[in-house]
Image (cartoon, rainbow, N blue to C red):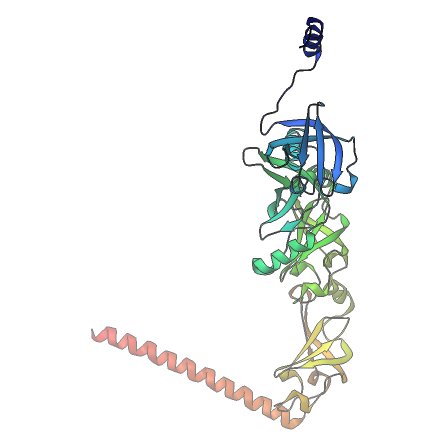
Length: 402
């Protein structure tokens, strides 16, 4: 039986000892790692309890191999392990709470952070932080990463987004739903300041070197500092463009000229980096000049002569010969070099017509044929006029009878 001194000492020690605080379920507490066994961690809390963090509650928050004995860790209380007589803790869920709290602060501070998407679906890039999946909507991607897909093909959009998985993104938090643990990130918001600066310094006729972010049938998409503008197919080249991808590649840097600017609405041109070739031709050639060049193509009614690059000079079937021409190929061949006379030149309308027969005098038989054709046309016109006059007379007579 303990004497009074022992009882007094016990009471003294009991009074001096720290209060035993039994944590409640879902509390987040701090403890010290005292043992690491296989994939589990034993944690001591306040030198009062030994608790267990099981492998599935470590998650991918930290590298398991980086955890060392006597490390301080934050953990969440989940419940009891009856078999082992220990309380069950979660490192993963404690870090989720911490991350959610930090990201809520980022929403207020508008701080830029770096994330890596871990997977993708049709409308989102998914970011896994401490076991929670948060989102970068497609609409919040910068032009350089936005999926430019013809006809909005879902399969191609997903293919593009999968290509972005594990890539680093600079983002801002733009929406936090703590109840549903839902965070929305925006890459566009992270570069808004750069966008404003780029717009402020831009002027009409500026020549800039920017990156091609997308190519569709009728457009090139050009991006710089988070700004994305368009080059219409008609502004890609002075000649006919039926495939913009022949003139540029995605991610390639190209020079463009600003041809129109109204706040953030901008039009760009590639072709205007060079002088209009029609203006060059207007200084170089005039009606009745004789030129020499190869025939590049022949159709049923036209021969095409290529001169000064891509511009097509036209020779109509009727200007091939003074004689009757049924097939142009009977007179000239593709790639044959021929001389022709300019008989019509309208630079503003982008039209040049040539003639082969104008270089030679028409033979007598041909002249007679021309005269005969003229008489036939004249007779046809006279017949039309006569028929018209008869109809008018008949109508007049009918009115008089009435």
